[in-house]
Image (cartoon, rainbow, N blue to C red):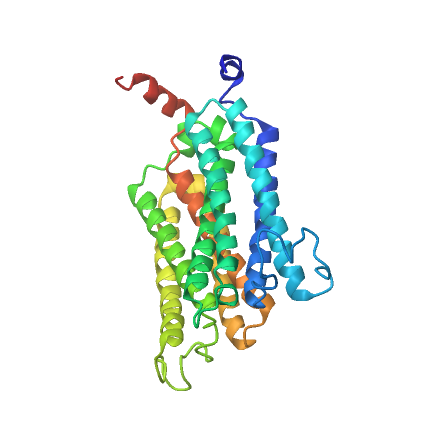
Length: 334
């Protein structure tokens, strides 16, 4: 163990950073596969778990759309698990920053939990437990969807922490002194996460078309003509979209209004602005195309990207430079 500790460094490790980027690309594909599986209602293409029809290579999975979507999602999830193990081992052996090693360890446990939640969604479906409702399986599905966002956020944080910019940049270059930028970044991140939560409830309750008009909720009114659970959660999601837009625009305005924040986060803020506009368009397109599965899936994926990029900016806004942080740790009373 002492040998391993002596090998640990806090310097920039280009191959570790590339590995993190690769994992981010892979999880993007996984998120698309999971969203598409939900969009075409293929979550129960196989009634068993962890195997699929009793096999790791079930018959017909590459020729039947629902089986292809679900089994691909399972295989991609398994590969994210392997990537998480690799990231945990790499940081444990080579990374001297304890908080980065902790993030990698939490990521691994969260990915394992994600697999269990995905399996619970299948094993406790009404087709397996023979109930007259599917509330239990839908609950697991919603938690699984939100857990995916937490996995994405952790991976974004680890990737940024392993980047050259984070490790080698001076405090003058990266420090964002504006407290309002940091606070509104946190508010925007939480608001987007809550919006994704309501979206997950809506999707798994099959309420994506509970309101079939957009931007109005009925032919001549902003409010729905009638109410039930599906209409209610759909309307909440639409109102949430307005709240997200307002909070996010305030956050972006704070970034552009602060010279230090604009210098450190300006390009990222521009990317978030483009993603916000695209997300609003995809939400409308999902309704206008009567929930086309590709439009709905892209809406889900861009929402995840919007959360990840906003969280990334917020994470960077709290960065003071590794040298300054190390100095404070040394000077802190023991």
